[in-house]
Length: 79
Length: 166
Image (cartoon, rainbow over all chains, first blue to last red; front, side):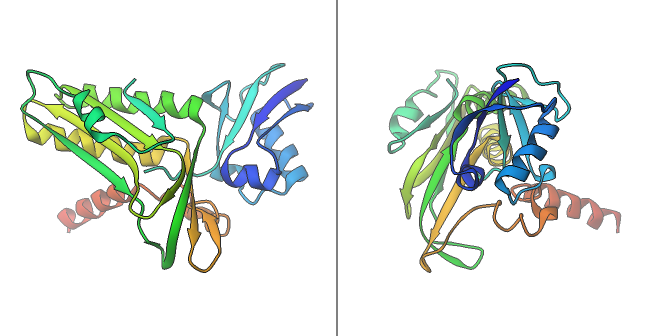
């Protein structure tokens, strides 16, 4: 299954890219984050993140589908 | 659009004009500025980055909630992205209403919720030459802090409740 991943802020810097298309067997955002954590060594744990699928906040256990766009959201600091 | 981003200086006169209403007796606004210090570090500049597709939706939801929650006429929030220097305006919130009380209350509600909920990130550059993503670098070492920041008002509320009980 192919997914589109976008990275922001600290995670963009740690991944060394702002987006990628990924072939993965990950069924859920939680599985996907475990895979990416192993690849990029992110310093943030999933407990510190929120996740969005197709530009809307999502549950970590939502089943992912071909072509979904996933964003992991580090702790925010607007204002 | 009642929440939007800009890569250039926030035009407060234009923004204010969008709140005008014959039934409004006034308006309250809040401006967030770039401060020269944070948590003991000397700050020399900032960069703001946003996940704009979701941030605009969440920002719009916050303003819509404020309009339901408080009897106000109009509300608008504009946030900068990109590089900012000291004293630059990072965010502007404005609310018009018949009377002042609800305008202040709605304005406070919007800025508090924006800081807590909207996917915007701030990288501070320090005089020391270091830089860091606010709420992300230190919380990596102290995860229990991660989601508490920006919710200070709730902790104060909690403390007030305890005081009353005593």
